[in-house]
Length: 545
Image (cartoon, rainbow, N blue to C red; front, side, top):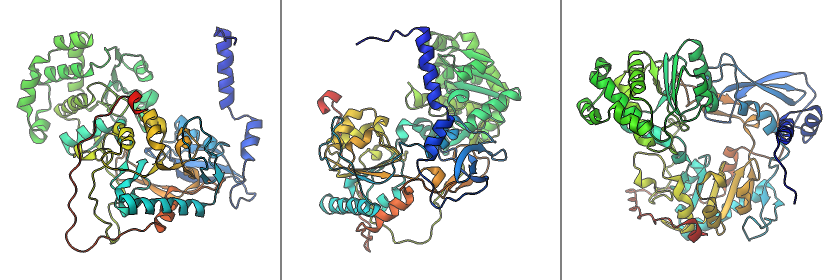
């Protein structure tokens, strides 16, 4: 086989082909727009349809330009606090997602019982009624034989009401691999979860989070607006990221040593009495212990750990403490993210820095995340009490709303802490797990329902594929949780009719629930929860597979 020599000329050819593949040319438009006609579409004049982006929890308000029943483009709405009239690259990509010919178009049933990456699942098209009946039958059978805890929902918790109704505790999310460390630490230390207000900040100090290059729309805009207004931007990061390239001061730091710098900054602020005395007195506990603790964490000590000059650490600490308002943004991609060394302790130190300088609960610092749906509902018949520990071991993290996502493949493989029979994957991916080979092995003997818009790698191990309508075809109300100056929800409505035989997750959940034998909680004292069993230490991948 001949090998391709990657010369500059060949590289440019490949790059040109890649860019060309992403460009919607005339011929490509014709192809995707004739794949299917929306339900009830008619010839009509152009119009804008207002809705909400469903790509991430930022939920930017968008307007869709529709011409003769065809979506042509998506735009932000200038008056919207989240989008500010702008969309990120993913937001613009919604047009391609809607008309993607590789979308799942109807429910599918597996006919080949053997599951592996080298097996053809033997998919056959089925009706929604048949899909619902098969799933409900499997769930009813599993509940009867193994109990409700044998049903598991992994991914986005769109089937959480179904799981609660049948009495299963296993509503498992990826939160522990997302922004768990920062949010959990904030909750423990402050009692709340906070969001950085970059728009109003005069000093932004970043430990590795690339807001300009990899932040959500609202954070990228906040960073840009702050820079336009003259905010000073300082970045500790090993690489020259987009944010670092736009900073007033980029400080290359040895990977994994951000905590040392943060502790040394606390040392300078307390020893030179640069802290906000009124804020600390009114809002903080343990100030004397913090002062005592950080005496050994001098800038010289931090220099040895981080390779950042002690004089630089001192200068940054003084500037940060004396410029108001100031902000240290934390999110899943920064130094406080769950995949980073010392992430929890770094977030702890950042909270101390924000507290010492009085930048928590104020514009330009951290503002609270203030809205959540589902707090008020009409009286309902309560479901049976949940009396089982969870597959992901949430019981061992009582202050979190989740367990370690990383443990799930092994727990399913070895039936810990009990046997599981039916697994719903809702908008989840096989490769979102640390050990996809272990998870694949575990799913060989489970009944797997895959709610998705594409047939991804997980489909090799799925028994039923359910095609979900994308956000541009759905109706609903969604909360704003990323950056909210006041409580907000946003309305989602279809911009065109459905192109294929797809349904919303809510409708699918409802139809499955109608067919499941749900028991009502009996009168009398509630059952006591069982004690969680000790988790089994995971073997190596080679031993598991």
